[in-house]
Length: 103
Image 1 (cartoon, rainbow, N blue to C red):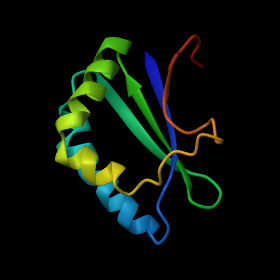
Image 2: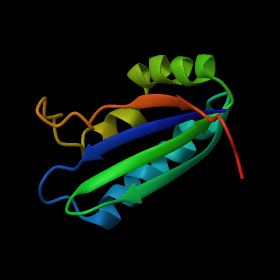
Image 3: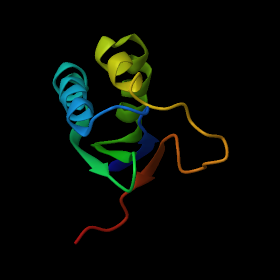
């Protein structure tokens, strides 16, 4: 099991309800069609900070979906709501983690 941790901030003026509506379209139009996508959680932190937490069966499928996202209108719409990454803010971007234990 691979867990994808993808923190981001949204552009000013984006309502939570708008982000969630676009996130739903991303789920149904893109992620649900990607092999290896097990489940996804959308988390909200302080301010306009969010995290997409996506569970994949393996890293190869996660990487393939990342490549496929380049041609997805649903991904383009979702990513368009995100503020540009701040190079001073290292938690932005995404990373893959391997589940080592489960309780």
